[in-house]
Image (cartoon, rainbow, N blue to C red; front, side):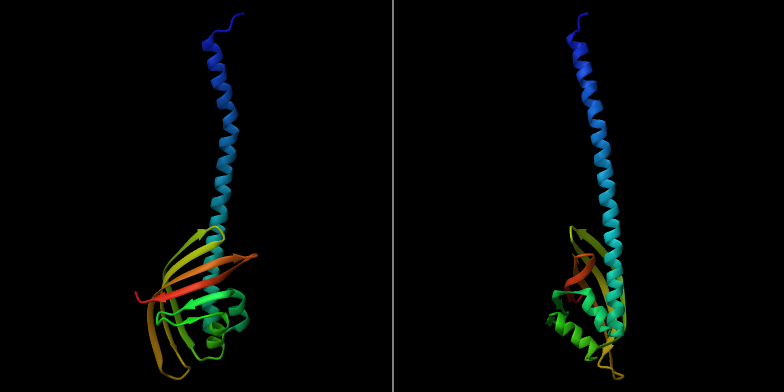
Length: 160
């Protein structure tokens, strides 16, 4: 039996196509796993933002310390910048008391082990007396996955 070049070419083409089908399926499964990981990360970061807001409102020192990175750089819209110790101290010592914090227009983007969060911030804060100041700003936060937790690494408030 003689095999023509055409038959040989068709056979080779079919064989190569059959070999790539499992690769394509494996790649599709990997992409789905990545999407699932990103969805989980988005939800976890969003939850961390909510927990940080609650901790600020309740002046919960342990919770604040667990949610922010040791390397925290916390920038206010006024230009003031705090490290972790100063950020926690101002809230826990009630130098700043948050009566309310409302976040809106939030977006979260995952970049490997980092997350970029943007939102509008509206709050009432003061020194605990009856003089409250209303703030309406925009905020950029950078969260970092440290171990199994997301920690606030950097935050910058700015006038919208």
